[in-house]
Amino acid sequence: MIYRRCGRSGLQLPAISLGLWQGFGGSASHESVSARCRRAFDLGITHFDLANNYGPPPGSAEANFGEVLRRDFRTNRDEILISSKAGYHMWDGPYGSFGSRKHLIASCDQSLARLGLDYVDIFYSHRFDPDTPLEETMGALAHLVQSGKALYVGLSNYPVAAAVRGAKLLQSEGTPCLILQPRYSILDQQVEKEGLFVAAAQNGIGTICYSPLSQGLLSDRYLSGDLTASRASATGRLAAGMENEAGIERLRALAQIAEARGQTLAQMALAWVLRRPEVTSALVGASRPEQIELSVGALSRLDFGADELAAIDRLAFLAEDW
Image (cartoon, rainbow, N blue to C red; front, side):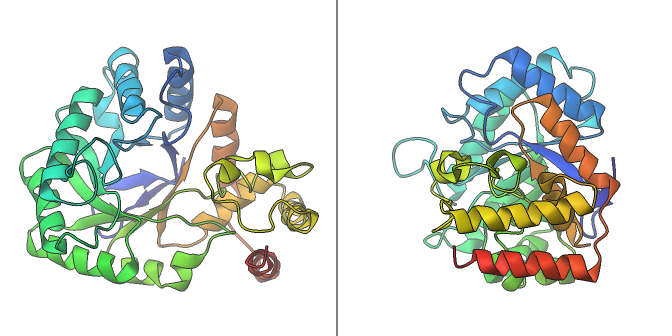
């Protein structure tokens, strides 16, 4: 495993982190969740990323991972980084979502109870709240650190300007912003165009990117078939036109570049995200331990030639018309 320093902090993250967004909640058995988490840890993945609403149903991924902590990682807590988040809908009524002090602190308490922990290592505001003063949201995050419920805090899905202002507010509270968590992949480069990575580096903040495989599109699974069966389609993130043959042909062209590099398409997609020095870690999901092994295999080659990057960019920019 490769470990990268997170911004200007003292914390290092594994280049590949395990996200428990999909497939770790609900009816997933302890044996299944345990097998994936244990294999990840054996491969050097020390960071497990959760949120209060991960499931379905909401909260079930944290509850299941809490059981893994109790039964499998009881003696390993200090070797593991655990993150959680709050901001998306979690319970009924006006306090069940977004960025109020009420929601963030109550959510953190609930997450700690499900996980069976006294603190999480990183706690995020999961999304920007346009109706709550940013001072209130950042003040709540600082309070969680000051009260010992979180060691560090971060911001997920924030517009660049709001993230920079939020980081300055956190700094004024004596609680630096550790990390930003944006969606980023070959097929979704919006945050790069908006200057998020440059802003993070200028402010000494790390980044961890989710959906580096575009919810499975950048894998070999759909190269020969119908993309409407993909998770991206199920979650409404399948780009217009991706269901047609032209879109699949572009994915196949990307796979050919990966093959020439000695990688699968998924491994190249992860390496491409990690090519940026500002990216601390890439978040991967997995339905089987073998998928985690393949993801970690991406670390054997992170370098790209100028011709490879140009070819990938040409295909990515064409994808905007899909």
